[in-house]
Length: 111
Image (cartoon, rainbow, N blue to C red; front, side, top):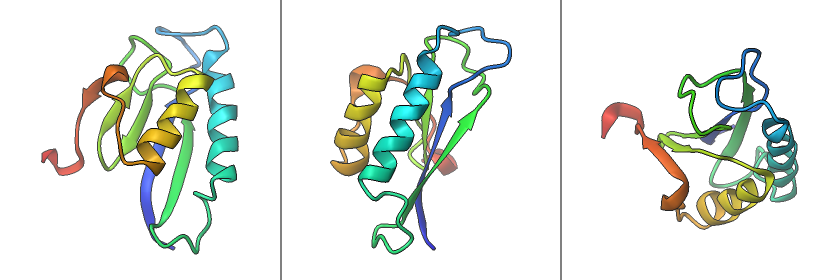
């Protein structure tokens, strides 16, 4: 199995500093459903699978929930279920990051 991306969403922080209103959990559920419905977890997908992880905290601690996409190192802030849908369709499937929602860029390898 080849992996093309890994999505990390700070969905349920144990000590929330940037969000705790349930938006992270709702965004996680939407992300799971979209990744599945678009076949992004299929091990036979030619482009490789998209892994997803629900994490406690990504240590950005502002404007959360935050979704980090590796290897691009794109950090989306203020993630909601509606934004997750646009991120999956526009960025993951269409190859077009949504600049207005990006709060940080830290590409793997620094390049």
